[in-house]
Length: 248
Length: 302
Image (cartoon, each protein chain N blue to C red):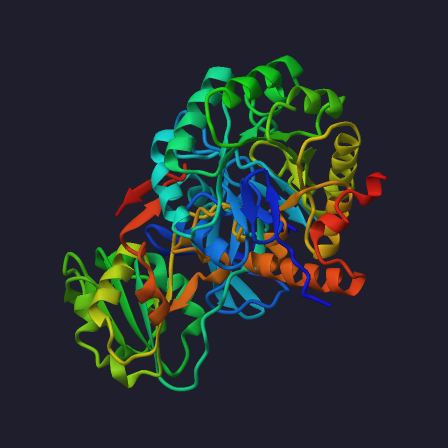
């Protein structure tokens, strides 16, 4: 079933990221995603960046489909199917949200009074949703040093006592998540990671997004740290659009 | 009474149960195939592999509205030279891997079949029926002369079995089945050509517009095709189309199928569908007093 819903507003977050707000009467949990279709172009997976009565899709412009989507105006329709995937596990107590690039989009529904954040980007103007955290609860890193720590997301995480959190939620590109997994390795922490891979069907059929026999779209996209540590393909090889195995 | 035995054999290929993963579903990555085999499938058929690397179609590649399931994936594949690694990983399972291949003529099919044999597959499945890629599949599978040439050519070039997967999108299935009867088994049926239009955008949903309908919507077509072929030809048939439960599988077996393939049901039940259907089959056979599958295979034909 394809939902077609008129958006309420289109907000600019950074030079490359927009958020589309709309009402959708469906139960969605943080970490779940939808397949968004732009008729005539293509269809892409996107996490919901708000999961209450008002829903939100936060679009990073990187290709034809996301570019077209970022230009949808209030009153115009978006088309999508879902929600799909396994949500993050919710906990009571202190949480740490670690988002690289546009990764903070899928973590945004988890921002509450118990949440602290780590936001990393190439430069200051690309830091997404850092303003949604209290000033003393946010650690920022930029590659060019234009804001916060000069360095990557792991450099920012070194500043934080990770064991103090009931749960650490992570979202970002696979290469970045690999560096985090290597960093925390077997430390005694609770961590869930939302992974990204080339996805075509979104419903556990086509095998495009699989890692070690797990389908990201139905077994994930969220996995706990111990499962990710067992994945031999994670951060090493993946299948191209054709199904050809390629190295990271 | 002894526990029902759900094993079966297609020629010299022994299967611990009659359930095979159909081509096109979760069979691109060797690790996925290996996991599916460890979770209950008796064998897997790979995605269809051609001469060259192909990306397939842009999404949307599926249009679903339960129970309707239409796909046009567009034969994405790494090309025959780069698929060996995936087959090697899948073979670590110790269970049969069937290599599906597609080509535009006899020579391509022969080349692909020989390579698949080198990679160690247990059989090749000739995709003579992909309904949504021009120049391949159905366009070949609807021509009895070409089908006969391809099957003969492949059979003469390899020592492992060759199965022929046929399309229901033809005027006379029996003519094609007869043309393909030099193969070791017929796989019936591929998807039925179909389409879905989204009425709010006024556009076909699939990027390729036309796709293949599968799942429970096509089961009666599949049953009819198996029945029709088994009524006229003495050749092993593998039934496929809309199998979600053991009751569906039993229907195909009663129409004469030696084994069945499952694909679309993974949409609803996930990889666990294989162990689910196996368990249901044991239950059905015990409650009906069957000890072996042979006892009810083809009984509807009599």
